[in-house]
Amino acid sequence: MMVSDRVELVGLLRQELEALMGEMGEARYRGRQVFQWVQARRALDTDAMTSMPRALRGILAERVRIGRPEAVHVQRARDGTRKYLFRLTDGEEIESVLIPDEGRLTACISTQVGCPLACRFCLTGLMGMRRNLFASEIVEQVLALQDGLELGERISNIVLMGMGEPLLNFPQVERALRILSDEYGANFSPRRITVSTAGHVPGIRKLAEADLGVNLAVSLSATTDDIRDQIMPINRRWAIAELLSACRAYPLPNRRRLTFEYVMLDEVNDSREDAHRLVRFLRGIRCKINLIPFNTAPDLPDRPSPRERVEAFQRILHDAGLTATIRESRGWEISAACGMLRIDAAKEKA
Ligand code: SAH
Image 1 (tube, rainbow, N blue to C red):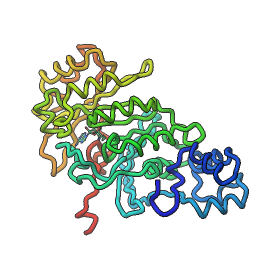
Image 2: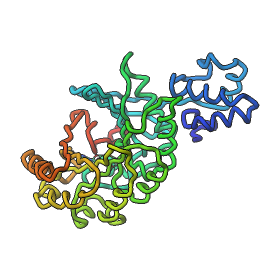
Image 3: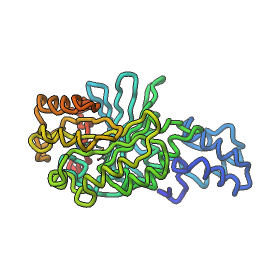
Image 4: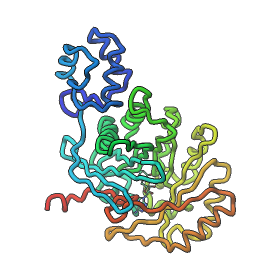
């Protein structure tokens, strides 16, 4: 919550602001007003909060800070995808992506600077782990992206699929999601928010208990522990069977489904046998499968599965009655696609 010596207003829950106002001898509803100014109207300082008494604005101004990450660089792909490089107050950098698609506008948000999980096919993993983001920094990505939109454009969906493993930063992620879904703030319905995990089993259980109502996506990407151990080292800690049993226990509201993401790697996880095993694993789980064509990069060892093999894989899933889509790669030429978010320390210094 504290990034500077002042309280980061963007990282406070509405209930905390109400309590804070109470402590200051003010009516609690003032807290709700401040929350609305910050989260719904995206005020950048207390002066803008014209419904608040001037004296109170002055007191608040001395105690709090309203932050935005600095947009160092914005790149736009031909398909409309935009990638933002944001610099945080301590100089660390993260990336966020805006993806327009059939009337939707999805914000893909980071939860950590770097990532400790080192999945073999992901560039963020090559950065290693630098630090967790604060809730304020997670929410500020959404606010800053929304600030930069044209009049009439509105972010409709949020996916925690940027840099980092959200469930390794659970308390700050939970706080950010409660702030973003508050009806007095940005008011994102939880059904328009998706948390994506590489398979952190205790985190999946905590997310279930927190009862936020958000969607869960699980990056599975293999059907044997042997292969998954190699490409996603987190599997050595929580193997496929344990992961699937945590998925089965995840409470799903009516008509909602889990998502399984599956990055298609040539001759690694893309055989017919893999597809048939996947069918067996997912029997009885209300889910859909998202097949992700592998985005290559010079520093990554794998090759993408040929399109015919991806389609053959999809057909086996379809024939077994499963819903499987092939995720169209977005923003590839600006390195904004899945697994391509990385801050290159060498390039930065140059
Ligand atoms: N740590 C979380 C959130 C990151 S989401 C998770 O693993 O789910 C990133 C998504 O992109 C994951 O589904 C991951 O499997 C996928 N991905 C990573 N690297 C990729 C690459 N090079 N090509 C295609 N998809 C990739």
